[in-house]
Every structure is written in structure tokens, then in C-alpha cells.
Image (cartoon, rainbow, N blue to C red; front, top):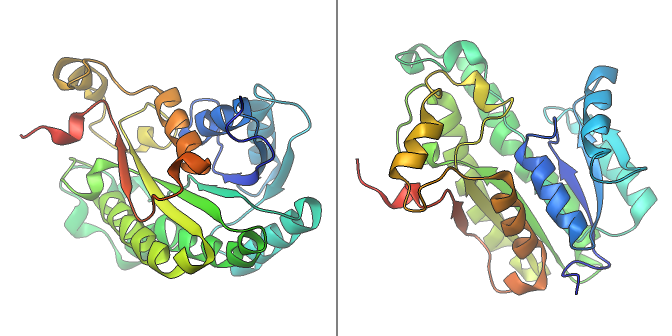
Length: 260
């Protein structure tokens, strides 16, 4: 039986078929969900997202979104509501930091604008999207919002720098949203996925040996697979997680439980 039959939602952040957002969309679709997609502005980004999504299903609904622009967010959610009428889940899988500052021993040198841009796009955008989702979710009895985090929000990962701070902000934002939106039966959680070699992770210096480290040290003796996170997203989007909100769920083959 499909766990998500009849559910409709928006996935933000599919860059290619290696991204966590792609694996999440694939798993949600396999369980009967109907996914719509938001991509970075520009024809090149649209083509890249469309090419990746075509590996999951045909005739996907796609719209551009500049997460740093309130006007762009307004346009995205207005267009989505016009064409779908309901929102059962929202997947936030976007983050940004200038790679110049994602290097060892560069954190203290990070300029104000680069610091604030990372917080804006990686964390504030979740609050901005959640606020635009409330009425649409509430009118159908509630919904599930999920965002992608990483263990660098809690412990120092060399070179992760401002992204670690932004992910910590994202997790705190999730808790405050969960507390406020619960009265609408809207659940808000983060998934802390293990290291996955993606377009985003390639920007962080010092990640070359993280795959090998996971295989050697993780309790499950392997690195995380995108489908691991996808299946967790299915759980969070489904009624199986009806009592779960404000949580950060680790999907990293157990790496987070280990000491230094």
C-alpha cells in the first residue's frame, strides 16, 4: 500500500540526480505522492532540474525561486496554490555559502555579507517558506515541513565554517516553527543526513576522505546512501510520523554517536 497516496507537495532544491532533494522526491513519488518542484532562477538551472526530475517521472510542475527574494517566494507559492490547491508537505533542501570562506582557518575572516547571506538563504528561507505554507496546509488539516541539516551544526567540521552556523540556525528555526505551527497540525522537522558527495558538498574543502572515514568508523560500516534519507522523508511526510515535530533526525549510519 502506498503511504503517500493522495498527498501533494513542493520540493525545493533538486539540482541534479545526486542531490538529497532528488532522492527524497524519488522516494516520495514511489510511495504515491505528487511532487512539484522549485529550482534556481535561469534557463540553465531549469534545464538541469528538469533533466534530473525526468528520471523520476514525466511532466513535472517546475517553477523558479530565488530564496533570497520575498517577491520570488510570493510568486512561487501563488503559482503553486493556483495549480494544486493543497499542500501536504514541503521539502526545504537548499543551502548556500560563498565557497571562498569554506576553507580551513577562514572562518574568522568571513565578511559580514557572506555570513549573513549564508544565514538568509540556508535558514531564514525555511521560515519564509513555512509562513507562506500555513494557510494552504491548514485548510486541509495540516501538513509536514522538512529541511536538510548536517552534523556540522553541532560539531566542528573543518572547512564547513559558516555553513555549520547556518545549519545550527536552521535547526533552531525548525524548533521555533514547530512550536508555533503545531496548532495548525503542521509538523516541522530536520533530517541530518550524513556526508553525500553532491554539488553542494563539493564546495567544502577537506571532504575528500569523508567517504572512507564513514566506511571505517560508522557503526553500520558504510556511508549514507541518498535512499536512506529519502525513506526517512517518506516517514516524515506520512501519517506514520503524526506525533513527531521539532526533531532533528540523524540519517548518517550512526556517525553522530561517536566520540572524537
